[in-house]
Length: 263
Image (cartoon, rainbow, N blue to C red):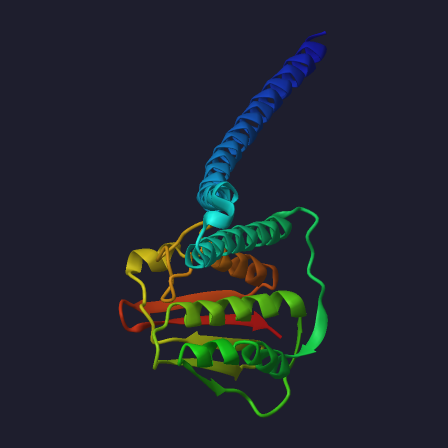
């Protein structure tokens, strides 16, 4: 009888321990859920904030055109249409970037891996920016390996990474400066550098630039409004590739991005 009582006491003690353990796990999950809800609330507010202004501007100017009709001068008509176009362009770019970010954060997301010749990929992406750089009087200097380098990666996603870094370099660089792009092959990984002579960043900005919606400068050198999602997307893509990214910057002197991906 005493033996059965001991077993029963031990069993109850084990149950109590299990209940305490489950209770702590539940509390932890509840805290995680609350954090996610708070993050989503802040995120949604930022999405609304980023879209409300350009959509409102486009709507207001379209109303002016609709109200004034033929009474609007050609000069004003062209100006209003340009404002509407810029506002809607920003909204579309923002929604496309947000869609891309959400896709990367989806639980079902997976890389489409394949063996790719990396030097050719980099050259292809650079060629897409030559005209834009030339228009802004910016030189693009390259230092690429002469040999072929085959790397297993998601071609589309890594093109997005390289494009975003070159786009940022052009966006924040004044005329008569140089953007340097270098690829270095190591034994187990490939290193890519994008270095500009642009406006640079403070130490505080450097520690925050990979956060969603973080914007160093609201407008670029050519007065184009910045979205604040590009580098967050870059970081996620490289995380999926088990890669790394580093940034060094000095105000008014330029910025250097360096990312690495395993072969």
